[in-house]
Figure 1 (spheres, rainbow, N blue to C red):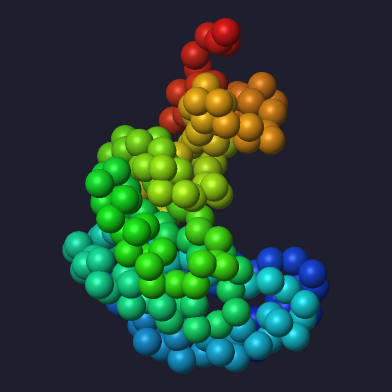
Figure 2 (spheres, one colour):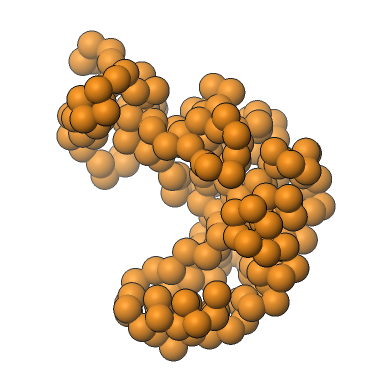
Length: 219
């Protein structure tokens, strides 16, 4: 990881490098090839390499709600992991519901705990999978907690090879429609996002999970 991070930092000057950690060992071993403790052992060196390359650092904590191998992830465990992430000079921290088990109440609880555990200067981001059809509701809960950066996937495609049965991220166009309807200025062209989602469906030759791209234009 350190050698690879050195190369990445050198190639990605003045950009952002996202490092993914896990809140559970079961997923970390499969996704990162090491336990949570082992990934943090090389975190200082990786962060230094990124800084030397002029890149900003963002950290994502996957399985922040639950793990397909270890089960429920306690809030205290999530807090422990985000505190380790914040030991380095990150500008952003994301929590990810990798297998889509969270509900809005979980989002409120965990984001409040995370915010209390890290410096205020660190921007929060949220990443939701729609495996159990809660991603939009969870995104709204995150925004209610002050999050202003959300991950999405055009047409709602995707998944995770290490999370059996996991659906893709919440559809970007569904997020855009909902928040635009609520009065937020997303800065993203909804019509263009819908067109891109339809294009993706055409290339795949099947209906995609996103809803707004399949609905009549409104208003």
